[in-house]
Image 1 (cartoon, one colour):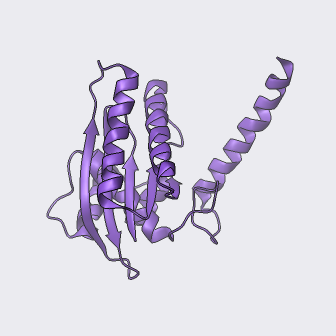
Image 2 (image 1 turned 135 degrees about the vertical axis):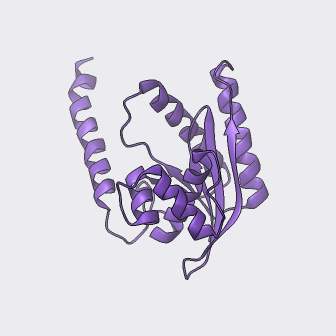
Length: 196
């Protein structure tokens, strides 16, 4: 399975592509970081990132796209940029009829290292080991994108519509927490919508 993984970010968007065999052996296909300067207008930054993602999709023809889902973030500005880039990536994949999976950072860490609270250095070291590299790609966004791609392939392939997870499998604790948080936000937002 060829998976294109995306670590979304507005200043640095990591994109990694791996081929993963049924025996879980993974091989590096490509890795890059799409960069945009903070002083560039937002719409041009999103266009630059989108064009970069689309070029990689067309060049490498992945079977699926896996994107890191931000579960919580204190910096609102960072969250907005990450969400906007995720939207651009989702749009690019949908235009090509590709399934998309969303994985939380803890899911990626658990899949790669066996430990959901692993630090970035542990994840990077395991990515290098899994792919047979002398060292992890730099910057960290590149290694993170590869980790997301490997995570998806190892967690079981295709995506069930609207779940962001593998078909036919139970939700992980992180996915269950995410789904509960989404339900809670919809429930608590409903009275406000009615009051307007």
